[in-house]
Image (cartoon, rainbow over all chains, first blue to last red; front, side):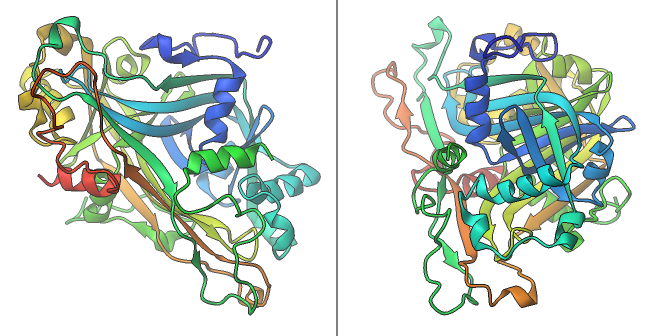
Length: 233
Length: 233
């Protein structure tokens, strides 16, 4: 990494639609922080996997967790190369030719070595962060984590060694000669929105509001906005 | 595959939360058909990648395309193992302990060998399907694909050899002794919805409606519903 950008190498260089590539940390972090779920790319004995899971960022470290007994956690525990990809689908681009149909999206691909976190303090702090990063302050209101739960959970960390964001946020781009073709062209926008909270039917008397960490999750709001805000708290 | 289910093998067997696993084709196809974007897991010289792209299904074949010159297409062209994962995030599950926080989701992981489609008829048909599968009938209204565009596009096919769906659609599941803990618990639902179409500012006179293949993309509708409907047409 040089300054506030990731070095451009054969690993992260974007060739196709390279004008959409962003190597600065601000762009990469922006996509990560707005996207709660990522796909972890890894390979076991040559068999590739892409596994979805919640991922959160602390500086240049990405964290996720899983059952200590899971295939992914056991494979990554001793240290293994991984690719963590965050993707938001923002729209459908309807062009005048099939070739120029595309989608609006934001994606960040992060590369590095994933490994199990064994330091007890780091693990304890990040198991709280797994909640607080998305719902600031909520962990303090919960029943505390037990030793058994901590043991049953594998926490994985990947320090970002290389990364690239690709952001397609433009409009229709047709070939010059196609603009006379009489077909509708334009954008179908897509947004992931929060719905009205559904209370569990066994709440204790007097517990009526979602409360700490959930104030921002109001019906109709965009998930990416709320999750990015929470990352900044 | 036996009957209408995928064989359960070490590759696709779900160990963690195995009660959410579904090996029947109907469940796997249901997730695929409702999810336009997938992540392709593959590895080049031991370096894993998870690359997002639009993927469509025809029977037991998955198709996606990319630039013929792209790293992914060139790697997969001669035949390479891949994992294609489709994921929908449907909600956030707020429990009374951090350990029982989770998400509602639908995911399908499909395994097989990806390779370049070289048959000209299959390629021509599927390049139309890349549009028509999502927007039924639209390709007929477009400027036809040119030979140069066909050449510049790499079409990849993966026949599903193994697959599993995992569907988390329940509610909060706390430990029995945690129900007296006085914190709010419940579900924050999430949906990806279609926004009002934005017309390109260079439409031909008289072209005012999105038209063929876009009738179902009405503002406020759920994308997963619309995309799944289109797959059935």
